[in-house]
Length: 74
Image (cartoon, rainbow, N blue to C red):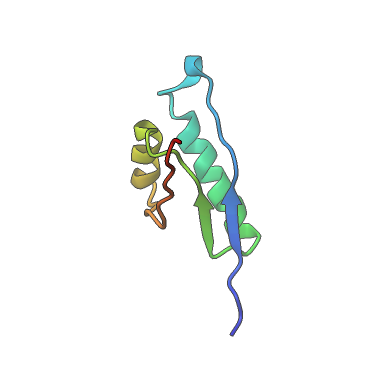
């Protein structure tokens, strides 16, 4: 069985002064297109559960939750 290529976005940050202008949306669309050109079958990323704005954007762009990570403060 051949494993599909996967692309992963490790970090994206938009400065506060430039948020809500569609920059992140366009950057993500660009990354997605580049991943397709390179033969990737999927694009993944990690996001903190508390980052509601980013989660909303990712969902609007078609991302689905794939896993949950949990932590306990000791």
